[in-house]
Length: 346
Image 1 (spheres, rainbow, N blue to C red):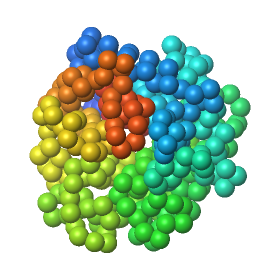
Image 2 (image 1 turned 180 degrees about the vertical axis):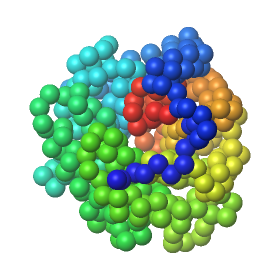
Image 3 (image 1 turned 90 degrees about the vertical axis):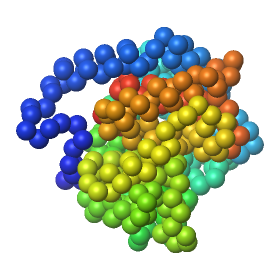
Image 4 (image 1 turned 180 degrees about the horizontal axis):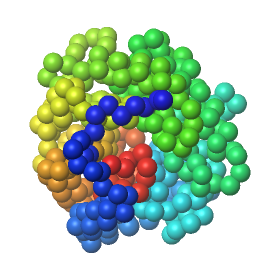
């Protein structure tokens, strides 16, 4: 079976695991404590900004490079899903429907999900996020189109894995990097959760690649080629890659988390970190899965930083991509305690 669970950070082996009802009550209590009224207002403003910026064709994104970009659309859709919306249901059900239709319309016969007029930097990023999104709305949308195109998208990911075990900017990439790889393995995990077959060999090769990218300091390098330099954003991505592949415990996880703990949010990172939203999107997932003190110390600082730097129109700025991307990421992070989107669930 693909995605074997290697270890578990959630329960003591000697104790009975909590029932689904006990877990639901625990998460509801935690969400009530951590998603404060001020936090919810920030989320509401962010979602309203995204809804107002959605184009008639269902796409999102401004600027000359990332307009109609499928990654920005998928992330915006995930932000709505994290608030409990679904296609046609909820305050933003219409936006979810239009997002789904846009991404389906950009699925080529090969399975590649790409808006060829706005591929951005590294179209496999977009393909990974779009595949993940379709996996999350699978089962919520009538008809077979989502499943059919999701299966084709998964096949493209599997077929484009390179000999190192990872993925690169394009389906025919001869190299791999940790940043694109995390998008693909998360998409595969979400698809597997939705009942789409994923070869175990693909997952095993990815685990091996990610482990080979880990440096002696516990952080992760960008590629196997070149200098082994660790950095916070890609190290957060490395940990989430392993989680997505079913690895939750072990020396590599422990060393990776020790490295991430050096970058605890301190209130000014949003202004100075060029990959702030990318890094915190993955770091929040890593800390949420760990739970306990790691999450309880990390989230309030990150939450307060995001709230403090939200722009009056409800958005967050990002000079590298666009405001829609940053706002979607910010809303996803702030809604992590809701635990509503399967791929982000603890």
